[in-house]
Image 1 (cartoon, rainbow, N blue to C red):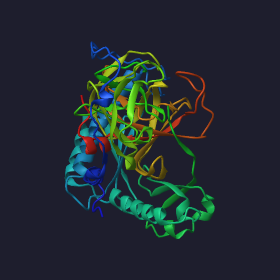
Image 2: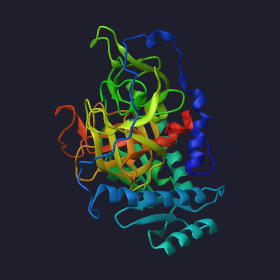
Image 3: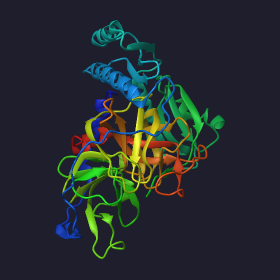
Image 4: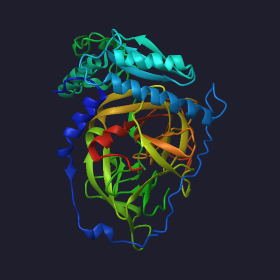
Length: 435
């Protein structure tokens, strides 16, 4: 049982189960393979975003500059809100980037340290914090989320509780958003929801599909490259410590080779490494690389691009934040905004999946496609020459609307809405993202 509802408490829970990860160690068999070019130069190419600039901004650089400022304020508020006060009224944070505001949802009276930050920011006149009254604290919503999750996982699939697919805090902390395969109207009287102790908004569940499937990468490997396992093709996410590369757990099993070029493509395979550990509850895995992994991600188009950008930070996601994806099949895709954080998905790719983030492309354009699974979700920094790690692509939601496929080919399963795992979960398991 977890006491307290802060993001830190949740990640400590995840870190505490890291010892239960399936760990597999192999000898040099996967290190054998074709020769690779190790004269690769790590550099940071300025990022060019082709997606339309959202309303309220003249350029993407302006948007990212404002978001950097607001993100730093949100981080300060989040840290002080969770500084050892188990009864904190903190509920949630949303970035209103267009309005140059941080929306702080709080139940009751602000703590003194948080009030000081609010006063300091609002007196600066460069940005503002607007405090909104919340119906529930983060702690209360997390407890209700856990209660529903526990009942749903034990219930028959054809029951009301068993039909629940996802549970997420509503961004303004007014309750929980639950999706179900049953008629939402008939679910309103279901005890699993009426007994939760919080207001629940019920919506019809949308089918989720793992986004299965640049292409000739070499050590030290960069995030966003393409690799394949015996079962599928995927993308890598970010370099971690000790030569590890984080990706999606549904892309392969422990011990699977991660090929840059599989045996069917070359007389001798080029092997990036092997799947070393998996964490199914977050749809996360790490590949132990041959030759190491560097703190850069591909940020150009799909396919054979060699444009890369340095990763300089790793931060959690907030509602309203603008992010980009950079999977190996889609390339850099931006104009994507975070809708929900802290999602529990009961029918994830490998079972119940926790701490997911949902985001969608505001113009209805492609956010990801099959083959992008495991790829990086990033925030482009205001210098336009570096990025912040935000998460790892898990799934796409289908069908929300018809999305034209772009990227490696026009054929595929493409979506404007994705689930991704918060990068802080990966860091709780395997240490900091390499920068």
